[in-house]
Amino acid sequence: MIMKKSFLFFLLLAVLVNARGQTPEEIVNKVKAKLEKVNDYEARGKMKTNVVFIKAPLATVKVYYKKPNKLRINNESGISFIPKGSVNINLNNLFINTTGFDIIDVGKEAGTDLRIIKLLPKDENADVVLSTLYIDEVQSLIKKAKTTTKENGTYELEMSYGKYAEYGLADKVIFSFNTKDYKLPKGITFDYDDGSKKETNPDKLKNKKGKVEIVYSSYIINKGVPDSVFK
Amino acid sequence: MRKLLRIELFKIFKRPRTYIAFGAIAAIVVLIQVALKFDGKSYMDLLLNNLKDSFDFSDEFKTKLLNGYLICFVILNTLLIQMPLLVALISGDSIAGEANMGTLRLSMTKPISRTNYMLVKFTASVVYTLALLVWMAALALFGSMLIFGTNDLVVLRSEGIEQMKDFDVLWRYIAAFGYAAVALTTVSALAFLLSVFAENSIGPIIATMSIVIVFTILSEMNIPIYDQTVKPYLFTSHMVAWKGFFYVKADAEGTTINGSIENLPAILRSLGILLVYIVVFFSSAVWVFRRKDILT
Image (cartoon, rainbow over all chains, first blue to last red; front, side, top):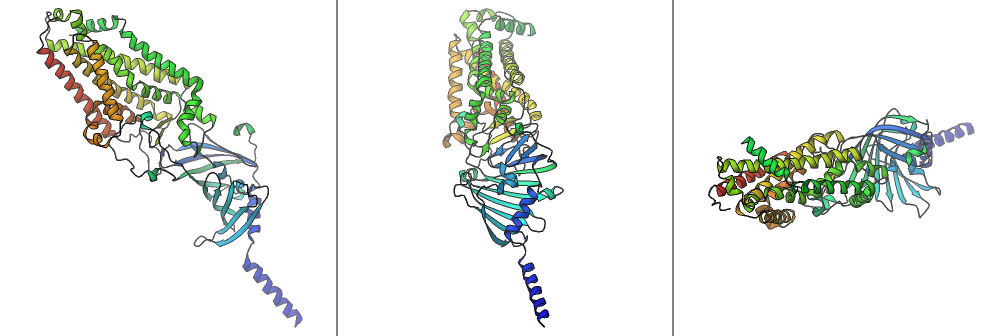
């Protein structure tokens, strides 16, 4: 009888633990462990810039990364406008904080089943105020991230994964960032007025979200990247 | 006719003052190139000041941005005011200079109609204008390409930025210089017309420049009452349409479409308006000259 009760108790305990799933700390640690497998990489890809006041061609880029937080986007054959905070496209950057984080579990996102976890830096002077991660628990991959900073507003990341998922490296990254108002005096530019309708609402030209989309074609992982690349 | 044209061109290119314009263009272009070669980064900082809160600009980015194509664009922008003066120097002198020297009456004793005489004079002015433009293209475009190399061209407009791949730029410059030839011919035709009324070349040159300056100011001012009523009819509003070749189309996501022009019909309309101006100015000059009592 006692044996039977003990068995039922442990069975119930096992079911409860299983139902509770992974703790947020466990999920974050698994994601971190996956990302930490990468010491450096050199990736090739195509970059698309989508900012309301910029018309830019599709660029062929090389992205270099080296631990802990060195990242460089180089346009191979031309010029690319690289947004501030683009270092955040490297997901390791989310976890760089010497004093650690408070981790808050917000539950699951409706529709996608992604686990939403918020990271609150313990250091009050840190530039990052809050990071919200949308994590695929099964694959331990960050699918979306929102980072709010003191200085440069909010950055958003959206990732799609493919053959480099085991390293936590995305095949496609969409990086959204805040852009400031752009305007130059006509007396400097001497624009040609072709009579076409101009945007009359000045609010549409300022404080809009800009987007940079990088589709990676290949990664060279942990083969060493010289520091001179980042200068 | 051909012989007469050769004589007119000989007269133009024999005069030392003809080369003032070539010297002035060379000086402006070389001064800009030297300044940007040695202090281009400061100029880039000034241009990019508006964007530095949103984007990171490395020294490598600035070096790439400051390429021969951009330098040529800057030079063309700067020469917008000076070139008409240099063109007017010769065209304004075309008839008035002859009258001043007392050789106009002598020329009219030759067996050539006044219309043909005017045609030859104007053609010679146009050849001079084209020579000036070719000189500028050689220095500003090919000189800058040689000194600074080539890369993507970034054009800063008052409300946006246009970026073109380097392979998509050269044909735009060829088209822009072709357009500029028509634009400067318009100024040449105006100076030529005014030259018919004067017996001293200073008058038509200064009058041409005054008209160009006043019209340019009106074209650039943002006064709603002029935007639809006056500006579309000023030739100076259409002289800057060469820039239209550097305004590109983009897809819904803001990606430049290679080989595209944002508003080609508008450029062609502007070109048409300038051609009408040239015809009107030249025809008026011929009409007045045919009825003119030539006393000197």
